[in-house]
Length: 482
Length: 127
Image (cartoon, rainbow over the protein chains, first blue to last red):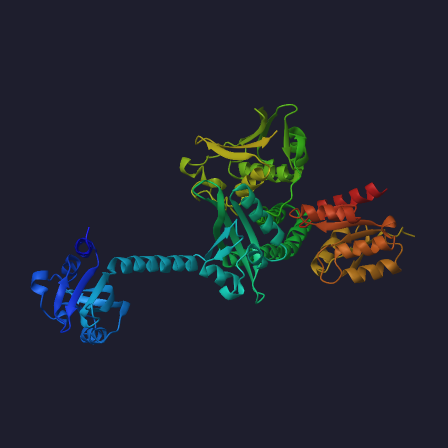
C-alpha cells in the first residue's frame, strides 16, 4: 500500500469518526465560515450541514454571551487553543450545557487556514449531577430532621467515614476527625466506650448487626444520648467489606423522658402529702365522731355513725388513689411465693368483714389450691374485688368467693348478685378512672381506680383478670400463676 | 390512797390528735403529751416511769423513725412499749416501724375500740 493509499484510508477513518461521534464537530476557514459540520452538530443546532456550509459559525453556534463565540474565534485564529471550556450553547430554541474545545487549523507549511472545534453536550451529565445534588440535599435534610448521622467503617483499612450530620451531632469538625475507629470511639463517653468498641468489633468480626445506646461527649463538654446501629456490607465475592449504619441523637427524647420521670415523682410526692394531710383531719372526724357515738344513743348516735363511716370511706379512697399511683409508677417491689389461697383469704378476711356485714357470703375454696403471689398484692386485689362486689349489689344478696385449680393456674372468682355490667362496658371497667354509668348504681361511686389496681397487681404477678356479666350479677375472675 | 394510773406519752404534732387520744385513754392512763420528737425524748429522759408511748411518724422536727433510733441507741427500747401511728397505704413503712422497735401499729384514722385494742394488744405482747 502506497503513502497515498494510507493517507486516503486515514481520511476515510476520520470521516467515519467525525460522522459517528456524539460530539458536535465543526471547522471554519480564516473568515469564520463553516467548512465542517458533522451530524452531531446538526442535531445540536438543528441546522443542516448543507445550510451551514459557508455561513459564519458565530450565527449558528451561539454561546450564552452573544459576543463570546466571535471573541473566542478571534483568539483561536490568532493561534490560541481552548480546551474543554464549560459554556452554554444557545441553539434550536434551547440552552444546552456543553464543553467547548477549539484549535487553529494550519496547512502543511504551518500557515493558519482556519479553526476546528468540538462541542460536547453535557446536559445528561448536568442532569445527573443535579439529581445527585438533590438526593444529597434531601438526604442531609432527612438526617438533620431525624437527628440521624451516617457512618461507615472499612474493615480492611480501618477508615471511618461520617456524614455531615454526624459531625454536627458529635460537635467535631471534619478536619479534627482522624477518620479511624479510634477517633469514632473517642466521642463516646468514657463509661460506654468499651461497650461500644466491643459491639462494633464483634459485629466486624462476625459480620453481624449491632445496636447500642450510649452517651456521647462532645469536645465542648455537651452530652448527647445516641442510638447507634450497624449492618455489615459485603464485597461481590461475599467477603465482609465494611460496617455501616446510623447514629441517632436521642437527647431530646431522653430529656423528655427525664422530665416525665421527675414529674411522675413529684406527683407521687404530692399524692403522699395530700394523703397524709387528709389523714390528720379525718382522724379527728372519725375518732371524735366515734367518741360521741359511744356516749350517746338514738338518732344522734346514728347520725354520728354515718359521719364516721363516710370519713372512713373518704380515707379509704385517698389510700386507694395513693396505692394506684404507687402501682402505676412501677416502683413496687413484689415478693411472689407459693401460698394456699385459703390462708391468703383468711389473712385478708379482717379487712373485708365490715364490708360484708350486710351480705351473705358463700365461700368455696378448694383445699390446697396454691398461688404464687405476693401477700400484700393479693390482699389489695382481694379487698378491692370484695369491696366492689359489696358496693355494687344490694344488702341481703349473696357474694360468692370461689377458688379452684385451672391447669397450672389458680383461678379465683368473686361473684355478686347486683345489676351486672352492660356488655359494652365489660372491657373498659379495668381502665383507670372508669366508673360505671350513674344510672346503674345510684350514689355508689368510687375513685374509679379499684379494678385498675386489681389489674395492675395481677399483671405484676404474671396473672390475668377479666369480668363476666350476664345481666344478673358480675363475676370477676383472677388467674394467678400456681 | 387511789392507785396512780400508768403513764402514757402521746407524741403527735397535731394538737387535735393528742386531745383525741388523751380523751379516749384518760380513764386508763395518765396521758402526757409531746408535740414533737425532740420534746418526746426530753420527757422520756426525765420520766423513767413512762413505759408506754404512742408515736406519730410524720412530724416536722424529729420524726418517729428518729425517735425510735434514738431510743434504740440509748438502749431505752427494752423498757418501753411503743405503739406507732401508721397508714394502711404504707405497708412498707409499717414493716420498717416494726423492724425499728415499734411493738404494734394503729392505723389512722382509728375508732375508740381500735385504739384501745392496739394498746391492750401491745401491752399484753410486752408482758
